[in-house]
Length: 149
Image 1: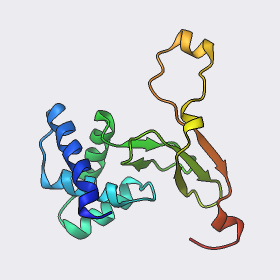
Image 2 (image 1 turned 135 degrees about the vertical axis):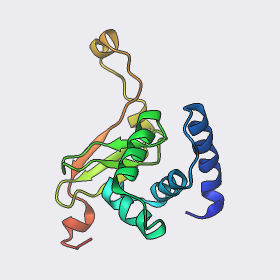
Image 3 (image 1 turned 135 degrees about the horizontal axis):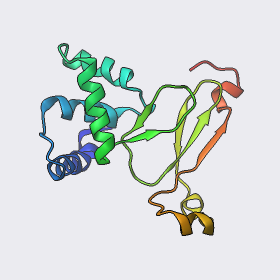
């Protein structure tokens, strides 16, 4: 992602921080920028390793707490998966995920038909639905062809 692509997202990030009374610190900016660059839906540890190469004194706890806070205020989202490790997505626009059951790779996809899936009436009657996310599971093309990541 080049700098012109992330400029509007950084502006939105800063506005969201202000809206939730979060200080805009260099650590928070670097963590968010690493999340924006990542297309592999990284775990906290993966983000920590990248951020630590930029800020060698940052602690794992700081990265963990920052990403938890970002999730709470809607800056990033947790991607559901079965690997036992939470994975995160900086793309909060409506989209869906394919999860490879072999390598645990998470792949974004966009499809208006999935966005427009009707909700079961029983769910609408009992709950307030805020989002719809579709998760497809299977074997990715790389695993299917026997390739390594």
